[in-house]
Amino acid sequence: MASHFEIELDKLKNVIVKIGTLAENQLIEAVKALLSEPMAEKKEVKKNEEKIDKLDVKIDEICQTIFALQQPVASDLRFIMASMQISNEIERIGDLAISVIKNSKNIKDKHDLIVKFNVAELAKQVEEITKKMNQCFLDRSETTIGEIFVLNNSIKKGTDDTIHNLMNEMKSNSKAVVSGMNLVMVLKHLERISEHCTNIAEHVHFMIKAKIIKHEKFDDKQ
Image 1 (cartoon, rainbow, N blue to C red):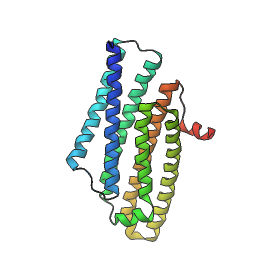
Image 2: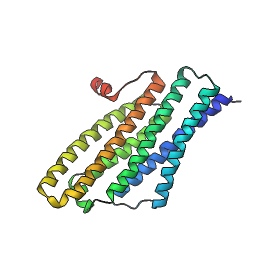
Image 3: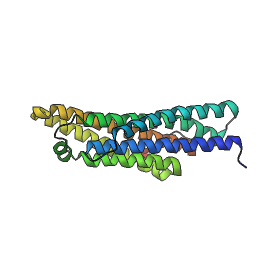
Image 4: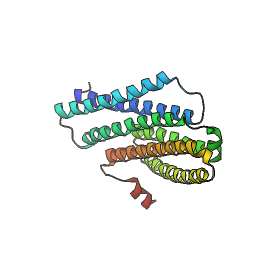
């Protein structure tokens, strides 16, 4: 029979998985909004946002309860500490996904800009890194963590290049300024989502290896 401590740890893991899945779904809806694909109703997106906020609070409460009633050590302590950090990162991903949806509404002639600057591929990469973020928490796989670091590099480079090209477009075409600026904001939101996913991968690495590794150091090793 599982102890109260084990039950609380299992509850914490399940809530992290749940909030991660909700954030992933929010990002999927954000990409749909950006690419003008059919997305969930506004009420559903808002409801998911509220669920993410509530689960973020719940995770803090579970961690505080465990610290107050138990004396976790070693791997259990790392898991609890990492979970608190991961929860905060996921909550930010959910917020940024909502910002992508809002900014996407202000991009006129969206299809032309997205095709011209290959934005769809970049957005799909962010979808992929968000899925890998949830996968690495579940599997605690060092291989997946490495894939996240590599993918984040690709997203950062792709974002920088695309924003540079968009700026040149706006300089030569004044009609593209308003839409271009909103698209730049969307790209920066997506880049930050990728960075939060990478931060989570770092927390998972700490959880399984008891070592803090920044993805910049991983890149140097590669």
